[in-house]
Length: 335
Image (cartoon, rainbow, N blue to C red; front, side):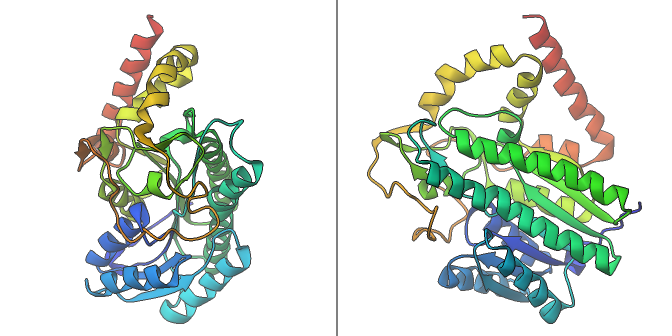
């Protein structure tokens, strides 16, 4: 199967969760590069704001106010992209929701809602896109936003971690099935490290303190660039940022050791020290009111570039990335 992807400047991209964080950063970067866009999110007002920002950068933009948990609505996105642009070239499944708290403290209805958005939203979008490329017989890309938590769970984000594990499993299976059918589609899993977005402000929270992204973190634009690179050059998995990515790699060969490191580190690092006062349900059931920004409120260092992800996306440097991971694993094995 040969997959030939066009430059982003010649593409139409469908992006879910496009009104804040990684989704908005990806839309703005794609607009700067001249792409056509179909943006999907739940809030019509915030969606129009995001669309106008992209239009101001010269992009042609359509919008669809929709919840990705509703498969029928994403079928409408497929039709809208065809009506407006004659189809699409890349589908980015980015929309997400989360909940902080001990597993025993999080209501099961809230846990199910996280799966509805993260896992089923990704499934719905991926299957719509896969059918489109299969029927059209043209090359394209499906880019699913997972997480380093696809490989290594964090305490206090157990249900979110489970959705990202599920997304990885689904993405891997989809890739193999499309390859078996010779459908010319690149299927990529993007795995961001901690990223400075409004993620903790939007999340449901059952801790006694407000959640926070552990510092240092990466700028959402680093993830956006990785997504758009995957739209142009076929890639399997891309981890954006080495900080947590190396920890996830070590966890595959020394899980007990990483558990011991994680317990004292990740419990306190995810708590701000400020008593919890916000809406405990976050954005699980309705769009957040404080969306519309790419960055969060991180009080700490933010890396604007990820050499790690650049190495993975350039064939001549990918061996170097593998060597670094191998060296880290070998060192862990000596303990």
